[in-house]
Structure formats: structure tokens, C-alpha cells
Image 1 (cartoon, helix red, strand yellow):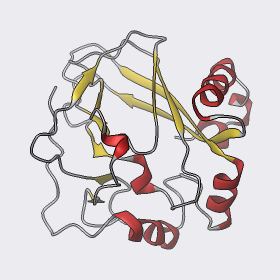
Image 2 (cartoon, one colour; image 1 turned 90 degrees about the horizontal axis):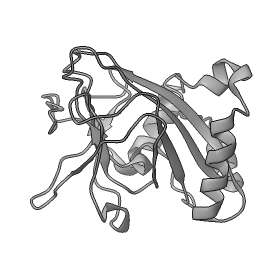
Image 3 (cartoon, rainbow, N blue to C red; image 1 turned 60 degrees about the horizontal axis):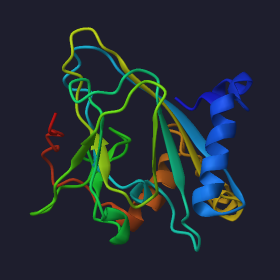
Image 4 (spheres, rainbow, N blue to C red; image 1 turned 90 degrees about the vertical axis):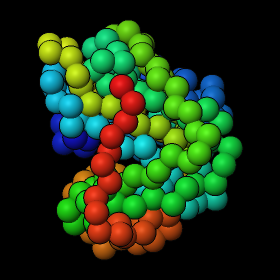
Length: 206
């Protein structure tokens, strides 16, 4: 869900303002909100897996890719309930080849990539109210919720430059799952290829 798009009263909340300051400290002036999201994993949802990916695989290539994605833990985010996982140093490498989790984007919006030999994911449990920040190149994901009574909810605000956001919108790309499939296909052509048939398992360390 993109709350500020579908529920405008959500805009200009305290987290947006604090996250904007963080984005400018890390990336310099001119950073604006590109999109926001609310994500939730219900207790006991072992299948609530977010496959390994780099955000740039979802997005168009622009001259300025600077991104600060601020991820706020609404609940305690634990290893058991599916905390974030990151691959240290992956922001320094090129975007890896990704593919749709379920054959093509008409069946699933989700893109995934595989880990390579030697890749070691770092699990990052954080407390409610804490945040993580990553850029467009950091390979990350999260496992399912194996707890019996703990939600894992997160509120995400992503910042990019005015020029980058304008270039995205000119193509009709808004980061919404409701974007035109032709727009998504055009973007996917940069970093994604059709799945070879069998869908990825999506299994992750917990």
C-alpha cells in the first residue's frame, strides 16, 4: 500500500519529516519523497517472505540514482518474525540479474535474485521505533513470520532527487503495483528476465 497516495491525510507526518532530514544528511540537498509503503507480516505466516532483491532492479536507470530508503519498525522486528536481512557491500556492485517470482509481472509484482557463492546475509533485528536506511543497490530481503503472536509491520519512505522522480513520472512509473504492465515491462527490461518456468522457492534464513 502507498499510504500518502491513497490517503493524503497521511502526508507530512512526523516520520516523513525526520526521514527527510536523514536523506539529506546522507545524500545531499534536493532529496524528495518518491514513494512510501506500509508492509505487514501476520503471525504464523511462514510464507510472508520478501525475496532477495536490489531496489534498483525495479526502477528506471537515471543519471542520478541517489536513494535513501528509510524503514521504520512499527513493531519489534525480530529474527523469528522476519526482520530485514542485508548483504554487506552489495551497494558497490552492479545491479544483479533479477526475474519475476511467478514467471512474469502479470502474476506477481515481485522481482527476486539469487545469492552467489560466498554471499552471507546479515540479519538485522531492531526494536519498535528504530529504523534502517539503505540505498538502491543494497541487496536485501526478509523471511517469513514464524512467531505465534507477533506482527511485523513496517512503514517505509523512500527519497530520491527531483530530477529522478520527474523522469520516472514522465514514463508513468509511480512505484505502485497498479502501474501499467507495459510500463513495468519496459523497466524490467533493464535488470529482469522472465523466469525459466519453475517459480523461485523464496526460502530465506530466519
